[in-house]
Image 1 (tube, rainbow, N blue to C red):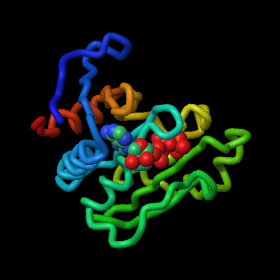
Image 2: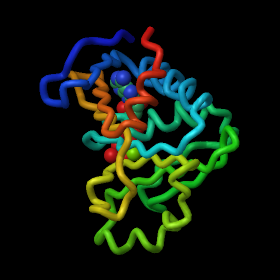
Image 3: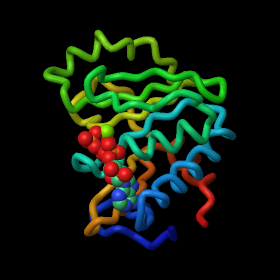
Image 4: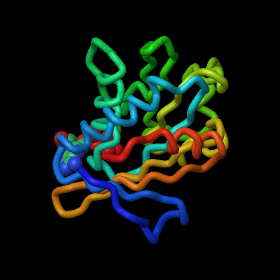
Length: 168
Ligand SMILES: Nc1ncnc2c1ncn2[C@@H]1O[C@H](COP(=O)(O)OP(=O)(O)OP(=O)(O)O)[C@@H](O)[C@H]1O
Ligand SMILES: [Mg+2]
């Protein structure tokens, strides 16, 4: 895994990270977890990418590295999987099957404390304005059989978070 310059499709501050094989996605998740382990604030991350791009795989790596002992399953059917790791409430949501943003009311996301909890959302755009503001956007795209992640900070808090990421 190595970091690259700018992805022209994304914002001017976007960083592209090549992920040549699944192990690189795991390593990227572990590095994100290192920043999270030191992060005192809440965080909202939008995970963007086609079916099978690696959004859930990245979450598995992040949560595993943070010490989640159990399996990290895709929230495609439950829409939300809550965890408590590193002393934090972490919500992993997948809104692909959300028919109407109003359904968000039934997912318990109202309980999220934006000051301390972490929310990772696959298909966040389906939630309309029902989700809290996004701090970090991570886009995963296919590059042949491999993947590329493009990371974009969307808020001051997101920029602070991303500044703590240590590139290999
Ligand atoms: N860097 C990589 N290179 C090649 N394959 C990868 C890479 N990272 C992950 N994969 C593979 O891609 C697949 C990703 O599946 P995953 O369920 O994580 O996708 P997803 O983006 O969550 O899809 P969905 O939108 O259906 O939830 C897995 O089979 C995983 O092994
Ligand atoms: Mg998924």
